[in-house]
Each structure stands twice: as C-alpha cells, then as structure tokens.
Image (tube, rainbow, N blue to C red; front, side, top):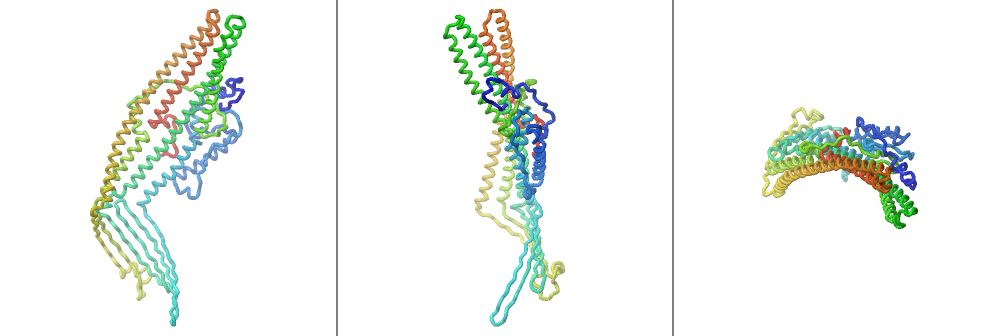
Length: 543
C-alpha cells in the first residue's frame, strides 16, 4: 500500500491500490492488546512480544509502587525496524491495537502515571508516622598552661517520631541518648503535642491538600483515558484517510484511462474524416489535466500512508495493506439527550472543571479558617537526667523512676491586626470560586452546543450518504443503458465513456460520504468519552 514507483501507471493497482484494495477486513473479535502482536514483523514477532510483555510488567510494578523506579527502568518497547519488505495487511482494529502498544504519546501518558501516583503517595504521607534518627560524635582535647590537658568525648543518638492527624494535632516523641566520658549514659525522653483550637483546627483546614491530591488522581486517570481516545481517533481518521486517498488515486487513473481511450477513438475518427483535425485538442488537454491530478493523488496517497504509520508509531519503511472500502452496516443517529447525559458524566474537560470547583470550595474553607485567631494548646513531658552527680539515676532508670520528670502545659493566643495578606487569600479564594462556577456553567452550555452541532452534522452526513447511494444506483443504470445503446448503434463510445466517468465519480462520492459520516461518529464518541467502550478496550493503567 505504501509502495509507489514508476511502474504504478503500468501495473495500475498492483503496486499501490491492489496492496490491500478489496481485501476483507480482519475479524474484530475480543479486544486485547495482545491481539495486535501478529506477524507484522515476521520472525521478530515472538521476541518483540516477549519484550513488550516484560515492559508491561515493569510499568505495572512502577505504577503500583513508584519507588520501583529507584532501582529499575521501564524501557517501553518501540516498533522495530522492518527487516523485510513484504506487504502486511492491516485492519482498522489492528491499527488501533498497535497504536496502543507503540504510539509514543500513549507511552508517555502511561509513564506519567508513575509520577502521578507518587504525588498521591506524598499527600497521604503527610498524615502518616514520620521517623528520623540523628546522631553526633564529638571529641575535645583541651590544654591548660602549667596544669595539663583534658580529653573529653561524647556521643548523642536521637531517634524521633512525629505524627500529624487530620484535626491538626501534632505529636512528637524523641529520646536524646547521650553518652559522655566514662561511658556515662544519660537518656532524656521528650514528648510534646500541639493542638490548634481556632486557626488550623478541623478536617476542612487540614485535609484539603489530601482531597485535592485524590481528585487530581481521579483526573489523571480521566486524562490518560482521554489521551488514549485522542490517539485512537487520530488513528481511525488517518486509516480512513488512507482508504479515501487510495480510492481517489484509483478513480483518477480510471478517468485517465477512459480519456486516453476516447483520444484513440477520436484519432480514428479524424483519420476516417469523421472528425475535424482539431477535434482532439480538448481531449489532449483533458489527458494532461488528468495526468496532473494522478500525480497529485499519488503524492497524497504517499503522504496519507506515512501519516498512518507515524500516528500508529510504526517504522516509516513498513508497507501496509488496507481495504478499499469501509463497512457501514446501518445508519444510526445518536439521541441528543442521551448523548448529553453521557458527556456530562464522561467528558474529561467537563469533569476537570467540576473537580476544580471542588478544589476551590476547599480552598475557600481553608482561607476562611486562616482569618481566625491563632489559639494553640500545647504540652510536653521531659523525663530523664541531663546530668547525674549521684550515680543513682544513671541509664534508662532515669526515664521511668520518676525522679527527673518535667511537665508543661501552655495556651498561646495570637490576634492578627490588619493582616492584609490573610485577607488577600480570602478575597482571591472567593473570586476564583465565583469565576469557576461561571466557567462550569459556560462549559456545560458549550459542551451541549458542540454535541448538538455534531449530531446535526451526523444527521446531515447520513442524508448525504443515502443520496450518494441513490446517485450511484442511477449512475450505474445510466451506464448500463448507454452500453446497450452502443450495442444498438444509437450511442457513441464517447457517451459510454462519459457515463462511466459519472459512475466513477458517484462511487467516489459515496465512499467519501460514508467516511465523513463515520469520522463524525468517531468525533462524537471522542467528545462523549465513549471511544474505548465502542472498541471494547480496557485500560491497564487507568484504573
């Protein structure tokens, strides 16, 4: 299909159009990515499939646990270079499945899921137990004139544990393990807590970041789904554009062939004196015009073939075979209200705006909380001896023997006066909330308008397709009638040629109308967010 050279004129459809034209579409059975691993690469397919399977396992492991990337690489596969120049048949479904595996935009979106999942992990970590271990070792050598010198050494190990909950409570626990000269071990236990009572108190003031991260994770899944749907739609469009370009090239060649046949007939008439010597000038002009159109059609065909390969992510040197027509079993017009309801539940842009509004509401609640006075209740317990001259409380006993215990409680109030920065946060939060409410309403209306226009276009294209079918039937009847007239001697070969060209043009118009209708349906599915459902594809990394 992608192979065009100087022999195309002589071979007509073999070098390009016949490379797949008229081939039946392959079975579009249960959709799995492994279905795309057919023999496009000949003997390399098994090895390539193994590499792809291993990469999928690594990607799944990295998404499940992003820290997997600390010691590993994902190394998603790319389409290998074609080793042989055999023409490979490719159905639309296979093109989609290959794109799911090799399209770089889809691969990048899948890799982004690793980072996105880690962002959610970071948000959850804020309310998890935090651990730390610090340690120091010091040695001091002092010299005193006329007296002598001293050598002191000390070691300090401090494990710490802290926890912050969703009410704003902050707990800290640490032990200072101090070992000085003569192996004197004097541990000190420190336990403290802080509880905001006004500003910073409550789940709304503390949980906003986590809820934002959870909404972001939901949107990331939606965006991955949308990215895949975008690429699938591009593959569908490129695939059908290749079919359309091939049909156009074939039709231009047929018309050129008929024009040359008419030219030969006119030459015979001129030689027989039945036509003026200048009677073939117009036909010569027509032949040259058709030659130019064939050349342009060949270039368009090559471009369409390369566009399809690039969209899928395949080697540019691969030669593919696609059918010469698309299947349209039944005309169907989607219901407007049903389509609107589906879009409001699945359209990624609309869902993103709704999530943004939820985030704005949380930000507004936080900004209101920040306007309150700062009233914090804090307390602490310190147990253990910092120094011991008696030797009775040495070691761990100094923590629990009750001889060295210090307890504190504190209530602290801070009243902001003319704090413009905090007021600015509240004003900004309220303005953003109002703007996004308006944006959501506008986006909803825009989405409904776009769906309405798309369905109207589908209705119009469906009628155009039906009219094109009737036009082909009438053109075929006219062509058959002219052939009978030619046999009866009441029509000329030129009349038959003209009606044949009309039939060719009508058939081209029918295929164009059919593809335009199907492309509009694909655009609607993309808008509604149902492309994957239509092709029965489940995302591995969008759950």
